[in-house]
Image 1: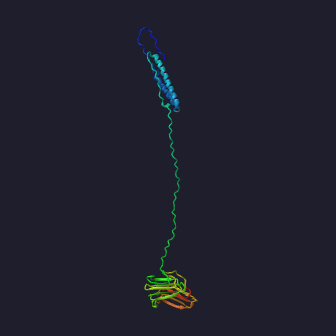
Image 2: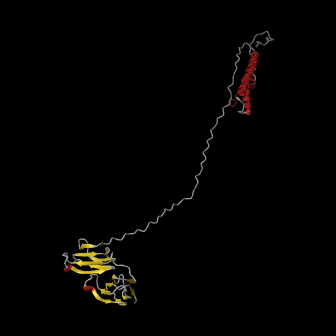
Image 3: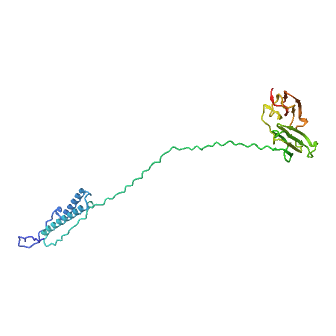
Length: 304
């Protein structure tokens, strides 16, 4: 840059320098710089943040160059206007504007809520408890007292009571109630022989009961009603109903013996009525009778 000086005054007289003429404010360097800065900002805003960092840097450099050139021009003008003034050229580098800085894009992580699968709704199931039919409880009948052949001591081997046997286990069933154990005939209270069922009451005063050839004796508590019967002892009211019973006799027997009794002791005191017959026989059994005994008569059937 060359130095310039004003021409000497036309007047020979030497006086003070003429007053420096001031320029309007828009022609000053700082105003120009501000205008350029604003222009660059507007251009950057219009261009948008899509420009890359290199373009922003180039724009900044261009702006700086323009500002430097403007500053230099202004300095040159000032040098011509102001003689003897040392002017220092200052290069002002404008900072990059916010619009010219490319901010790296921030990737916002997308949180995707996990798909919630609604549980399948099933109708409530009602479990019906399996009801198992319990078998009916069968209470075993209490075992009835019983005994077999031989001599039984009353109160020790057997207890007093009414006992029944199905009859002879072989040819004949013999029994006797005893009031002593001497073996003498006088110890016999009563006795009997039968091929059919026998029902005997053993009293508490009896000393012993003896039987031979008989099936087991079982405590008697009653029996089903029957409509016919043969030889043996039968309980009236339990097995036999009151009324007329008849038999045609037993051809193989020489005699038919029957008796109506008021008890099962088999003593003479039990006999209400008795008889020996041959052939057809009819007997009326009454309701007050306790026992009916038959021997050698065949089959009895109710006739009235």
